[in-house]
Length: 89
Length: 241
Image 1 (cartoon, rainbow over the protein chains, first blue to last red):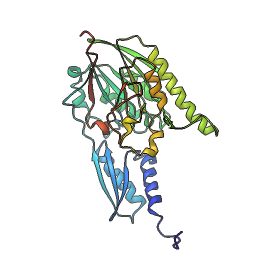
Image 2: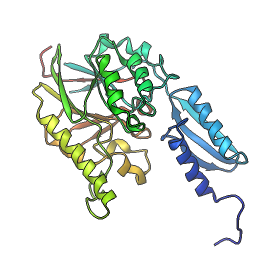
Image 3: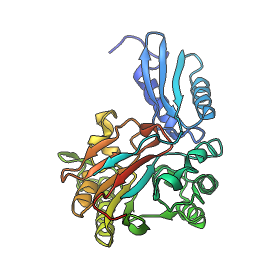
Image 4: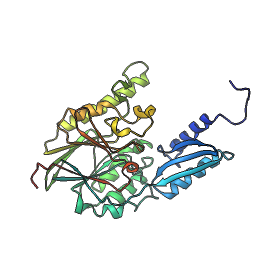
């Protein structure tokens, strides 16, 4: 048990809250984003279907945790035609 | 030979419409059918379903889909299904369909499926009503798939689900969430029929390839996994055509 009371919640609860925010916020609804601790704060990883969704994720998380250093490494999934088929004999 | 194109988890809304279409226009030249493995929308609204209809309708090949958990979010499943069916997309839920392809008759049985976990690490039909209800949903879904698979007369049989029938294709996901990503009962249903291939989505961090305990090939075609508009599988070398 720590001697601190109040103040910022432990990282694990923040991580859980971000995870749920991303899944449950109707403006986001993303279940495939991973939240990882790094020295300089939290990093969001994953892939989404559009640049708009990537921006919205960062905006919503920054809005909820304005004092938390958060960076994003979220990509937009490619949607090109395949160049090969898989043969399943 | 029968050529099957497949993708899942496209999560369409207005901001995504048009991204898949250039690749989809190529389908008549390279596939006999397109299978959609659920999570076609973000929240399962009628307006998002119209985006799916616009993107995946009128492609020149038959399109067969199951819904995913996202497609249930707003409790508008009947409206979503109607919008898709209005543009000729066949939506399966404990049902099957047969497509006449140049290479033979392709049978597709589909169900959304549900979580529950895998052999030795799964939920049980025991205890609180909520827990029993969860597992009964799993069992009923798998039984519906088994019955749909049994009911098809075709040359090549494919199972289409949103949730995974095996843990193999979940590799990359945290172990702790496997029970929310699939269940062994779906695999059992697939193995109880002469299934040639099982396709699913849902596991965005999973991997492409696996097999059921009975040896049926399983492919996770979630868009974040395949990282292309769709994957194509060639099956049925033994068939004429």
